[in-house]
Image 1 (cartoon, rainbow, N blue to C red):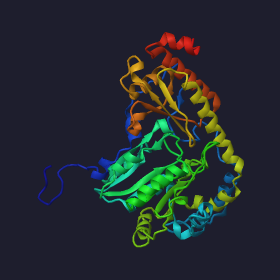
Image 2 (image 1 turned 60 degrees about the vertical axis):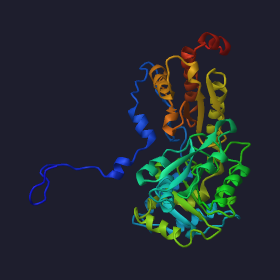
Image 3 (image 1 turned 90 degrees about the vertical axis):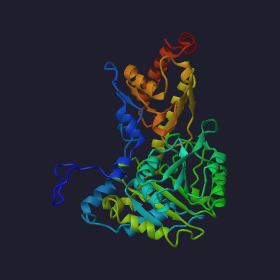
Image 4 (image 1 turned 120 degrees about the horizontal axis):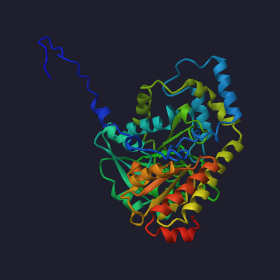
Length: 426
C-alpha cells in the first residue's frame, strides 16, 4: 500500500485484526454457508437451535418474572457493579451450589456474561497461546472457537455413542503432553445429552490428578437429567484436583438471553491460590461485570422458583427424547442414541444405505428442501455422519418432524420398498 510522505495512508484500507480473522464458530460458519430452501408447501420446523424459548411452549415462571420486575421498578440496580459481580449475588450463587465436598463462599464465585462468558474466562486464565486443552468430541463448539481466537489448541477426546457418550479414557490420556493446560468436562452434555456416572467422573479425576491437570467443568445443564440417572458435579468428586465449574441461568431457568453465568472455584490443593484467583479478577475487569438487573434478582430466583418449574421443562425434554428415539429406532440406516439428560439428541446415519448423499451435510440440506425440517449436521461438531436434534419443541411439532424424517428416509433408503413395508410407512 502506498504511503504519503507524512506517513498517512493514501487510501482507506481498514483491516480486521488477526484475532478477529482467527475467530470462527463452527455452527455459524457451517449453518450460514448452507443454501437452505425449505419446501414451500410445508411449515418450517427448526430442530437446530439450542434455545428452549424458541417455540413459546417453555417460559419462565411467574415468580421469576415478578422478581425481575421488582428489581427494575426498585431503581437500585442500574449502575455498575464490581467486576467480579455484586457480592450478595455471588453469595447467593455460592449458597445455591455449595455441597459438603466443596463448600463455597462469595470469594469462590466470579460472575460472567452467560456461561459462555464464564467458559471464556476460565479457559483464558488456564491456557496460554501454544498450549492445548482437552475437550469432548463431539462437544460444544465454543471451546474450539475460543481456541482458534486465542491461539491454543483444542484436542478432542472421543465420546463413545455405544456407551451412552462416555469418554474414551484411554484416548483422553493419550492426548496429554507437557503443553496440556486443562481437561474440559461437560456433563450433562451438548450436543449428546450424555450424563457421566459418578464412577466415570472418578476415573477422569484420577487422570487429572495423575498429570496434575485442573478440570474445567461446563455444568450449564446441571441437574437436567432424566429419571434413572443422577447428576454429579465434578467438584463433588474431585477431592485432589482443582476445578473451575462454569454454569449459568440459560438452560435450566429457560433464560438464555439474560446472559448471567458464573465460575465456581473448587481448590482443595490451593493450586489456584497464587495466580488463578487473581487472574480471574483481572479478566473480569474486561467487561466490568454482567447485567446488574439479573444479578440483583439472583437470590430470589434461587429461593422462590418452585420445583414444579424445573419438572415441567424436564418432562418436555424427556418425552420428546423418548418419542424421537422410538421413531428413529425403527428407521433402517439411522442409529439413534437415547440421551440421559440436557435437551439434545444425536443420531448416526449409515450413508451407504441412502441414495445420493455423501455426508451429513447433504442429508440435512436435502431434508430441509423436501420436508422443511432442519437439524444440525454433525460437521458442526467435527463429528461426521451424525445429526443433532433439540428436544424442547411442543409435542405436536416433534411428532410432525419425526414423521417427515421417516418419509424422507423411506424415499432415499437403498432398500426403500422393504423399509416402507417393515415400518408401515405409506
